[in-house]
Amino acid sequence: MTTPSLLELGTLLGQGRTADIYAWGERQVIKLYHVGWPVAMIEEEARISRLVAQTGLPVPTVGDVLTMEGRTGIVFGRVSGPTLVQDFATHPWTVLRSVRVFTDLHLQMHAQAVPELPSQRQQLQRLIGEADISESMRP
Image 1 (spheres, rainbow, N blue to C red):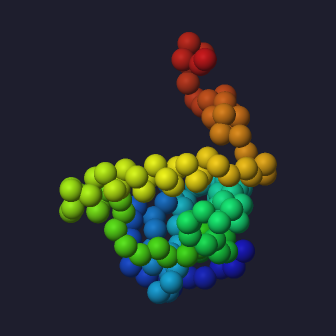
Image 2: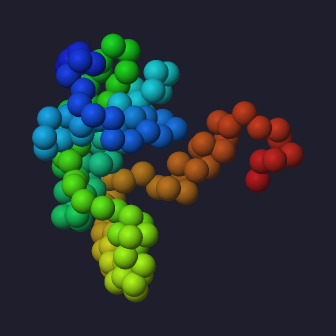
Image 3: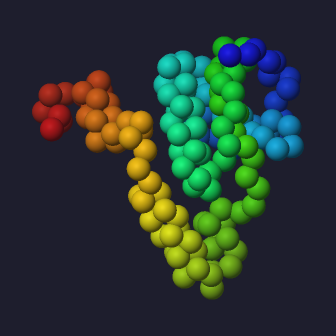
């Protein structure tokens, strides 16, 4: 992992529960996790993202995992343009086309066989097992 400075960050493009997305030059973004997220989890996301990118699906390229001033992030190729939701919101008459695009993409995803990917079912079972909840709420 390299250690650049937060001063190198571009415009804040989005914020979420786990991370903020910043421009990283003109052709990339960095998903910079909030302080406290385990580095192993972030590295696993990068590994899985690389595996998915190798399938040929239309996903961003995956770059380095970086640490900057206590925060770890993943560099991704920047994808420009509106989301399907934004496109539908501004052009509601395109809803059928948007649904077709969304459906076709999901069919392409489910047609892939990537044995190295972790089982989603096993991941959910592990997360439920690790959750701080009462026994009565567990399956």
